[in-house]
Image (cartoon, rainbow, N blue to C red):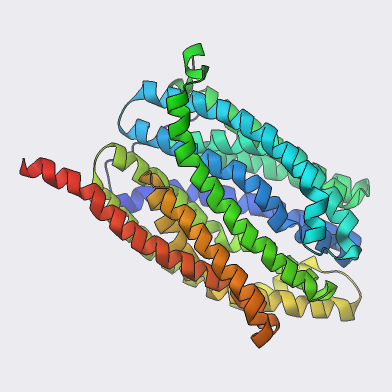
Amino acid sequence: MPRTKDMTVGSPAKLIVLFSLPIIAGNLLQQVYALVDALIVGRADGVVALAAVSSSGWLDWAVLSIAIGLAQGFAIQVAQAFGANQPEELRTAAGQSILLSILTVVLLESAAQGLLLPALRLLQTPEDTFRLTALYLRIIFGGLPFVMCGNLCGAFLRAVGDSRTPMLAVIIATLSNICLDTLFVVGFRWGVAGAAVATITAQGTNAAVCLLGVRRLPLFRLQKEHLTPRPAVCRRLVRLGLPVAMQNFIISIGGLVLQRVVNSFGFLFMAGYSTASRFQGMLEMAGSSLGAGVATFTGQNVGAQKPERVREGVRKSAWIGILLALMIMGVVLLLGRPFLTLFIEDDPAVADQVLDYASTFLRVMSAGLSALYLLFVFRSALQGMGDTLIPMLSGVVELIMRVLSALLLPRLLGEWGVYLAEVLAWLGAMLLLMFGYLYRARSIEKPKATAQSA
């Protein structure tokens, strides 16, 4: 049964950690079903099919991240209304978010399907994988309505303190994905198409469970007036959601440029790099989950006008993030290469070379996790405060750092220039977010200080 959680009272660190744990579990399972695609396809159909699925990541993210970002931005208003104990404003924000989400799906689906082939050519996708990558992405983009629904409902639930229902949704989706992957890829021999169909079916399952969770909460029992277009509310939601979506999209543009550079190094390097990239979500998982907890905590406490709790919660979350990053780095350095061998099945000479590329990139990413986890904490804190502009600008910094590194460093360092581009992008964005957060944290304390002196 869905339940809400008031995060405006109690220990900030305890609240954020306990709230984040179900999200970590859910994200872990979500990454499991992404890796299951790679594992089953790689073992059943070889390196070419694995590369086709793995190299689709940035283009997939460029489209889906817009829907995910809008959902995250819309939920900021819901969290702040919940923290301020304004149920009518919460329902209005939820209703208008639904209308905007429907419009988003229609526009995104049309653009994604229409521009897919030109985008793959622009990325210099190797002929070995072009047809399979196009097929995989066409099916994945067909699941966009499920992605939008699942993320919007999940964001609503987390905004009011329920992180367990989204975790349950991911558990069910993961189990269905593993079963269907095995059936479609191994049993029916559908290859990458089977993996894609299994993925969108799992996304649909996730959306259904989250939607059911939202419908069970009295807070989200919407009436006709909540679903009647209200331009002023929609503008507010767009001001919150669009920068988050643009931040994600801008980051993905840098990733697409990087993918083009990767493709230019040849098929084997592309296969190794892309295989390691499939694990990036796993490496990010704890940090992004911690960030989700920070965003909800910050949003509710800003709504309740408790800025001192915001500062305490963010400070402690930053230290927790660094500790988590160091622990994960240690695991990767010890076990990364043996784990990668599970995903690569081909001629030994080919498999060894792909494995060398993949394991090196994985180690480099793990070394930069502290910067990435701090990025998640500061970005989520700013978003919870209602400031989505600085996070969007951080996406621009990521774009610039990633593109410049990808275009210039390989000339000096060869393959290592490609490996370092990701970490340098994280570091540049984190520094901007850190200073942006410190500035905004002071600004939200000024009104309270003024009121107390009066």
